Image (cartoon, rainbow, N blue to C red; front, top):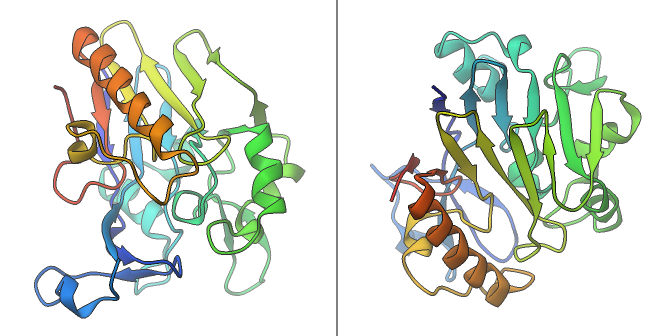
Length: 248
Protein backbone atom coordinates (compact mmCIF):
# COMPACT_ATOMS: atom_id res chain seq x y z
CA UNK A 1 0.00 0.00 0.00
CA UNK A 2 1.41 3.38 -1.04
CA UNK A 3 2.16 5.95 1.64
CA UNK A 4 1.71 9.62 0.69
CA UNK A 5 3.66 12.34 2.49
CA UNK A 6 3.03 16.03 1.57
CA UNK A 7 6.22 18.10 1.86
CA UNK A 8 4.90 21.64 2.00
CA UNK A 9 7.33 24.54 1.84
CA UNK A 10 4.52 26.87 2.89
CA UNK A 11 1.98 29.24 1.37
CA UNK A 12 3.01 32.00 -1.00
CA UNK A 13 1.49 34.72 -3.13
CA UNK A 14 2.66 35.11 -6.70
CA UNK A 15 1.79 37.84 -9.19
CA UNK A 16 2.80 38.79 -12.72
CA UNK A 17 6.40 39.30 -11.61
CA UNK A 18 6.57 35.53 -10.83
CA UNK A 19 8.08 36.27 -7.42
CA UNK A 20 6.93 33.95 -4.63
CA UNK A 21 6.29 35.91 -1.43
CA UNK A 22 5.72 33.90 1.79
CA UNK A 23 2.20 34.23 3.14
CA UNK A 24 1.31 33.74 6.81
CA UNK A 25 -2.47 33.37 7.18
CA UNK A 26 -2.15 34.45 10.82
CA UNK A 27 -0.93 37.94 9.98
CA UNK A 28 -1.03 38.50 6.21
CA UNK A 29 -4.05 39.33 4.06
CA UNK A 30 -4.54 39.17 0.31
CA UNK A 31 -5.53 42.84 0.34
CA UNK A 32 -1.93 43.66 1.28
CA UNK A 33 -0.60 41.92 -1.80
CA UNK A 34 -0.44 43.19 -5.38
CA UNK A 35 -3.64 43.12 -7.37
CA UNK A 36 -3.95 39.86 -9.26
CA UNK A 37 -1.86 37.89 -6.79
CA UNK A 38 -2.63 34.19 -6.41
CA UNK A 39 -2.37 32.32 -3.11
CA UNK A 40 -0.70 28.95 -3.57
CA UNK A 41 0.91 26.21 -1.54
CA UNK A 42 4.29 24.91 -2.71
CA UNK A 43 3.97 21.23 -1.96
CA UNK A 44 6.10 18.42 -3.38
CA UNK A 45 5.12 14.89 -2.38
CA UNK A 46 6.89 11.71 -1.37
CA UNK A 47 5.13 8.49 -2.34
CA UNK A 48 6.53 5.36 -0.76
CA UNK A 49 5.76 2.05 -2.47
CA UNK A 50 7.21 -1.38 -1.75
CA UNK A 51 9.69 -0.68 -4.56
CA UNK A 52 10.57 3.02 -4.36
CA UNK A 53 10.76 6.30 -2.51
CA UNK A 54 9.32 8.60 -5.17
CA UNK A 55 9.61 12.39 -4.98
CA UNK A 56 7.16 14.34 -7.15
CA UNK A 57 8.60 17.75 -8.05
CA UNK A 58 11.10 19.55 -5.85
CA UNK A 59 9.65 22.86 -4.67
CA UNK A 60 11.42 26.20 -4.52
CA UNK A 61 14.58 24.78 -2.97
CA UNK A 62 14.51 27.14 0.02
CA UNK A 63 16.61 26.54 3.13
CA UNK A 64 15.36 26.86 6.70
CA UNK A 65 16.84 29.10 9.41
CA UNK A 66 19.52 26.49 10.12
CA UNK A 67 20.64 26.46 6.50
CA UNK A 68 19.16 23.02 5.83
CA UNK A 69 17.11 22.48 2.69
CA UNK A 70 13.46 22.52 3.72
CA UNK A 71 12.81 19.51 1.50
CA UNK A 72 15.53 17.49 3.22
CA UNK A 73 14.31 18.55 6.68
CA UNK A 74 10.72 17.56 5.90
CA UNK A 75 11.88 14.11 4.80
CA UNK A 76 13.99 13.70 7.93
CA UNK A 77 11.03 14.79 10.08
CA UNK A 78 9.05 11.94 8.51
CA UNK A 79 11.80 9.43 9.22
CA UNK A 80 13.17 9.37 5.68
CA UNK A 81 16.83 9.87 4.85
CA UNK A 82 16.98 12.10 1.72
CA UNK A 83 19.53 9.66 0.32
CA UNK A 84 16.80 6.99 0.33
CA UNK A 85 14.86 8.75 -2.44
CA UNK A 86 15.09 6.48 -5.49
CA UNK A 87 13.14 8.43 -8.12
CA UNK A 88 12.46 12.13 -8.73
CA UNK A 89 9.60 12.67 -11.17
CA UNK A 90 9.36 16.16 -12.65
CA UNK A 91 6.04 17.38 -14.04
CA UNK A 92 7.78 20.41 -15.54
CA UNK A 93 10.66 22.75 -14.76
CA UNK A 94 9.06 26.04 -13.69
CA UNK A 95 11.12 27.38 -10.80
CA UNK A 96 8.48 26.70 -8.12
CA UNK A 97 8.59 23.01 -9.08
CA UNK A 98 12.30 22.64 -9.84
CA UNK A 99 14.11 24.97 -7.43
CA UNK A 100 15.06 21.92 -5.37
CA UNK A 101 16.47 19.92 -8.29
CA UNK A 102 19.95 21.08 -7.38
CA UNK A 103 21.56 23.01 -4.55
CA UNK A 104 24.48 25.37 -4.20
CA UNK A 105 26.81 24.54 -1.32
CA UNK A 106 27.06 27.73 0.79
CA UNK A 107 30.70 27.00 1.60
CA UNK A 108 32.24 25.58 -1.58
CA UNK A 109 29.76 27.29 -3.96
CA UNK A 110 29.64 24.04 -5.92
CA UNK A 111 26.27 22.98 -7.32
CA UNK A 112 25.09 19.40 -6.94
CA UNK A 113 21.88 17.46 -7.43
CA UNK A 114 19.78 17.50 -4.26
CA UNK A 115 19.07 13.75 -4.46
CA UNK A 116 22.27 12.20 -5.82
CA UNK A 117 21.15 8.61 -5.17
CA UNK A 118 17.91 9.04 -7.13
CA UNK A 119 17.13 8.76 -10.82
CA UNK A 120 15.55 11.93 -12.15
CA UNK A 121 12.88 11.63 -14.86
CA UNK A 122 12.46 14.76 -17.00
CA UNK A 123 10.75 15.41 -20.31
CA UNK A 124 13.56 16.00 -22.80
CA UNK A 125 11.76 18.80 -24.67
CA UNK A 126 10.92 20.53 -21.37
CA UNK A 127 14.62 20.41 -20.49
CA UNK A 128 15.59 22.23 -23.69
CA UNK A 129 12.69 24.67 -23.31
CA UNK A 130 13.68 25.55 -19.73
CA UNK A 131 17.20 26.51 -20.81
CA UNK A 132 15.92 28.45 -23.81
CA UNK A 133 13.26 30.30 -21.79
CA UNK A 134 15.44 31.22 -18.80
CA UNK A 135 13.75 34.14 -17.05
CA UNK A 136 10.59 34.71 -15.02
CA UNK A 137 9.12 31.20 -14.87
CA UNK A 138 12.25 29.16 -15.52
CA UNK A 139 15.55 29.41 -13.66
CA UNK A 140 18.07 27.63 -15.88
CA UNK A 141 20.78 27.68 -13.22
CA UNK A 142 18.72 25.34 -11.01
CA UNK A 143 18.19 22.69 -13.67
CA UNK A 144 21.14 22.90 -16.08
CA UNK A 145 23.01 20.27 -14.06
CA UNK A 146 20.46 17.69 -15.19
CA UNK A 147 22.10 17.76 -18.62
CA UNK A 148 25.46 16.79 -17.12
CA UNK A 149 24.60 13.85 -14.85
CA UNK A 150 24.14 10.20 -15.73
CA UNK A 151 21.39 9.57 -13.15
CA UNK A 152 18.93 11.54 -15.28
CA UNK A 153 16.54 9.87 -17.73
CA UNK A 154 15.05 12.10 -20.41
CA UNK A 155 11.64 10.81 -21.41
CA UNK A 156 9.39 11.72 -24.30
CA UNK A 157 5.65 11.47 -24.94
CA UNK A 158 3.76 8.80 -23.01
CA UNK A 159 5.23 5.70 -21.43
CA UNK A 160 5.84 3.57 -18.37
CA UNK A 161 8.71 3.50 -15.86
CA UNK A 162 9.50 0.14 -14.25
CA UNK A 163 6.13 -1.31 -15.31
CA UNK A 164 4.08 0.69 -12.78
CA UNK A 165 4.66 4.43 -13.12
CA UNK A 166 2.78 5.81 -16.13
CA UNK A 167 3.68 9.19 -17.58
CA UNK A 168 1.68 11.24 -20.07
CA UNK A 169 2.66 14.37 -21.98
CA UNK A 170 -0.21 16.82 -21.51
CA UNK A 171 0.93 20.30 -22.45
CA UNK A 172 -1.67 22.72 -21.16
CA UNK A 173 0.11 24.58 -18.39
CA UNK A 174 3.31 24.79 -20.42
CA UNK A 175 4.15 23.16 -23.79
CA UNK A 176 5.88 20.04 -22.40
CA UNK A 177 4.12 19.51 -19.08
CA UNK A 178 3.61 15.88 -18.06
CA UNK A 179 1.62 13.98 -15.41
CA UNK A 180 2.23 10.71 -13.55
CA UNK A 181 0.06 7.83 -12.37
CA UNK A 182 1.67 5.46 -9.88
CA UNK A 183 -0.15 2.11 -9.91
CA UNK A 184 1.41 -0.44 -7.56
CA UNK A 185 -1.42 -2.94 -7.91
CA UNK A 186 -3.10 -1.78 -4.70
CA UNK A 187 -3.28 2.00 -4.99
CA UNK A 188 -3.37 4.48 -7.83
CA UNK A 189 -1.74 7.82 -7.04
CA UNK A 190 -2.08 10.59 -9.61
CA UNK A 191 0.12 13.68 -9.78
CA UNK A 192 -1.22 16.26 -12.20
CA UNK A 193 1.38 18.95 -11.50
CA UNK A 194 0.04 22.31 -12.66
CA UNK A 195 -2.63 20.85 -14.91
CA UNK A 196 -4.46 19.66 -11.77
CA UNK A 197 -2.95 21.83 -9.01
CA UNK A 198 -5.94 22.47 -6.71
CA UNK A 199 -9.14 20.60 -5.89
CA UNK A 200 -11.27 23.71 -6.63
CA UNK A 201 -10.03 23.68 -10.23
CA UNK A 202 -11.06 20.04 -10.58
CA UNK A 203 -14.63 20.91 -9.62
CA UNK A 204 -15.12 23.84 -12.00
CA UNK A 205 -14.56 24.57 -15.67
CA UNK A 206 -11.75 26.96 -14.81
CA UNK A 207 -9.53 28.38 -17.57
CA UNK A 208 -6.31 29.87 -16.17
CA UNK A 209 -4.97 32.95 -17.95
CA UNK A 210 -1.46 32.01 -16.83
CA UNK A 211 -1.56 28.65 -18.66
CA UNK A 212 0.08 28.19 -22.05
CA UNK A 213 -3.19 26.61 -23.22
CA UNK A 214 -5.83 27.15 -20.52
CA UNK A 215 -8.62 25.49 -22.49
CA UNK A 216 -6.59 22.29 -22.87
CA UNK A 217 -5.79 22.28 -19.13
CA UNK A 218 -9.47 22.67 -18.33
CA UNK A 219 -10.39 19.79 -20.65
CA UNK A 220 -7.65 17.59 -19.19
CA UNK A 221 -8.89 18.23 -15.65
CA UNK A 222 -12.35 17.01 -16.67
CA UNK A 223 -10.84 13.89 -18.24
CA UNK A 224 -8.65 13.12 -15.24
CA UNK A 225 -11.56 13.70 -12.86
CA UNK A 226 -13.69 11.17 -14.75
CA UNK A 227 -10.92 8.59 -14.98
CA UNK A 228 -9.79 9.11 -11.41
CA UNK A 229 -13.27 8.89 -9.95
CA UNK A 230 -13.96 5.67 -11.84
CA UNK A 231 -10.63 4.10 -10.87
CA UNK A 232 -10.29 5.41 -7.31
CA UNK A 233 -7.23 7.57 -7.83
CA UNK A 234 -5.64 9.50 -4.99
CA UNK A 235 -5.10 12.99 -6.46
CA UNK A 236 -2.07 14.98 -5.25
CA UNK A 237 -2.58 18.78 -5.28
CA UNK A 238 0.70 20.68 -5.46
CA UNK A 239 -0.76 24.17 -5.00
CA UNK A 240 -3.75 23.56 -2.72
CA UNK A 241 -3.46 25.45 0.59
CA UNK A 242 -6.04 23.32 2.42
CA UNK A 243 -6.41 19.93 0.76
CA UNK A 244 -3.11 18.24 -0.14
CA UNK A 245 -4.49 14.97 -1.51
CA UNK A 246 -7.51 12.71 -1.61
CA UNK A 247 -10.02 10.74 -3.66
CA UNK A 248 -13.26 11.86 -5.26
